[in-house]
Length: 222
Image (cartoon, helix red, strand yellow):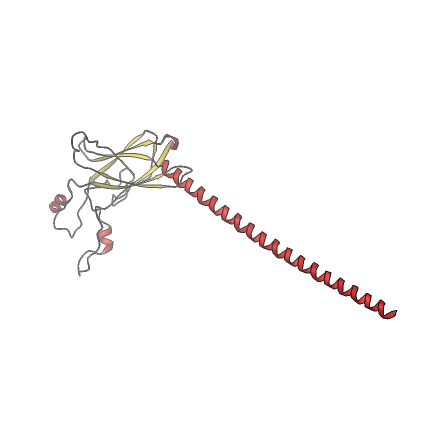
């Protein structure tokens, strides 16, 4: 009788241990599944956020392009001296812009590798083109390469004084410089800033001789 009771007790204990093992296994599997699901959810959310950020950036870039200032520029010597006329044509939503104009060289120039030739620093001090901003006028610097910031309201126009560029000391002659640059295109960078927007950097190439019949003097920076 005692032996039967012991066998029953042992069998019951084994059954309890088996059930405990099964329960533990189920709990572990559930925890593993839960962890995997959490990771998957995190990765999905992360990818969704990345996609949303990319879409938002594309939209911001599109908006920035659409809101680019429409700046008209014209070389004008009708008053007996050369000037650059600048007009802010829109978009009207910007209301006003701050402009900085900078003359671009007609091509890339480097210093000489020969002894006695101009250095890269000396070459960089030269404005390679037909005109420069008149130094000290309209906020232009001593080299005449760039202007000070100028505020323009929508549809407003302003003028900047120009003068012929100066040949470097190593150039053949002043006459040769003029022959090389007279009638050349005046090349400009147009930096624009407006409140609430990233800056824009536009460029323009202006004719400095009379346009062909029917052509406009005005050029829009782009």
